[in-house]
Image (cartoon, rainbow, N blue to C red; front, side, top):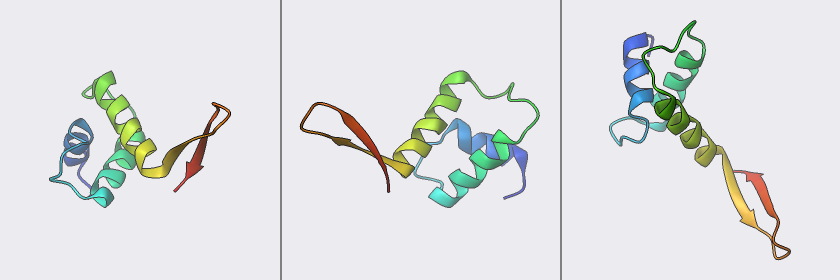
Length: 72
């Protein structure tokens, strides 16, 4: 994918099943390297961050009440 417009569309709809994980990751990469992000709302960027987080990390609740993050 080399089109900025498609990358923006994917990031704006990051939870959609219409796109593969690879397409989503590439779209996020292209968008994060753009000079400006005026067409993407804060909520859409936060959703992309959440998608990345949930695909890279897993919360593990410890018995002592502390939370630990582990990389998948």
